Length: 284
Image 1 (cartoon, rainbow, N blue to C red):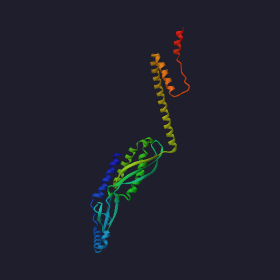
Image 2 (cartoon, one colour):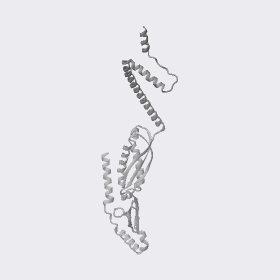
Image 3 (cartoon, rainbow, N blue to C red):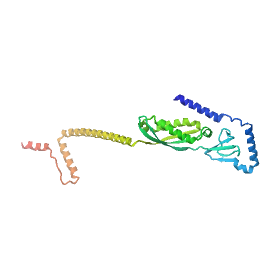
Image 4 (cartoon, rainbow, N blue to C red):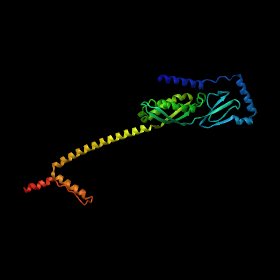
């Protein structure tokens, strides 16, 4: 993997060097003759051609000028006013603003053989207008197609649990892969986000049943722990009451006062056997 990345980096550097650093080759005698004729015609028809020579690009745009099919000065023009020759020069405007596009939903098999459908969104911008015009036919469309294939390739190596829990890592891996591939086109991929993960209906039901069973088991464990803690507390309370018989009578009286506060017409009073035994022992 390291070797492949290094080879791609070398190709990127060499392509940029060819496009930006090399001096433009000579146009030849015929080319200079055509340019000379165009200049004469422009000067001769100056009141009319002045409007054809002056061009304006906005702050977020750059113009790539072609003169007889060759890029002029190897650098874009703008923003502001620039001049072109009407007969020999053509230009293309390149937008430098950040562009977004949706990745259509892609169906694929995960690492654990689960069919899912995933879509996303990509944010990118042009940082080198010359490369975006000279190295690729349609930079935006090429980036969209590459994003679709990269999404399938990256997510195909992930399991379902990783896909649902590690979206940030997946987005970072996709951004790195896209940025390395599109740098030769003069495009910078700023951000990649996974929008939605659609699972089959049967798998959703199975996951819901699994989650429900897990919650029920956890609830039963918590209830059992509560019963155990309550029984321990009752045991400790019974030991405290057993040390003082009068505490049991006070507890009965407290229970009666609680019942009487609720305005009940009938009160069932449990009579302790210890009290009866106390009176019978006196009679004997």
